[in-house]
Image (tube, rainbow, N blue to C red; front, side, top):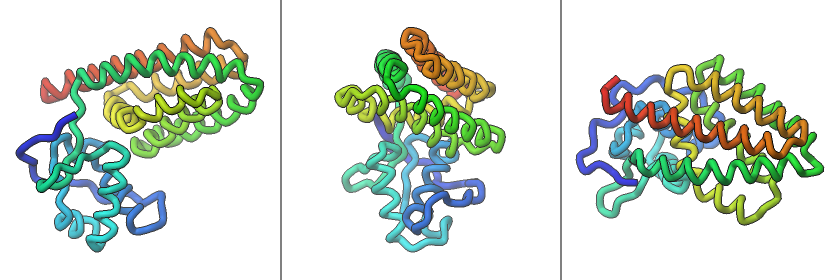
Length: 238
């Protein structure tokens, strides 16, 4: 990951701030800035300066700074000494490596989760998340979808009951969030992703470990292909 040396103008043309899902001022700032990053309004390499954010969000510097620390911790931005915060740039090579690793880990996690004695309970919880995902897609809320997508996969990782596997995938969480937010902007990707999630839920409900692993690997593979297509469109300026 890298940051650009010459940041472009901050927050130019930023859409009105969406209602915050969290309650504190720092969380409101976090939500607004993260929305701008995931939606592409703040592009990779852009510098985040406190003063313009204060003016834009109508908040004091303190919650803005707290939000930037939260975003750095989650991997959305990088703090460069003596220069400030920048939106992370994730290269095509970075994401290819991440999706290759995810494909293997997600397959293992889904197989173990499907074989778990609590698989029926897991399937019910996943179905609830899938229903919520469908609603967010219909509402066009890509940021909320990104949250639910991560929650969907994290639930499977947890039910796999493998502490080292959970640690490995959680180390990729920030990159997974970034990839999900970017590939979700590719036209037609979200309806396909929802169908893929439904297939994973069905396999887990049937306690079919082989099929659950296959569907999960395929889902990650197709998501990776969507991200590559997103990069291609970016290069073409589409």
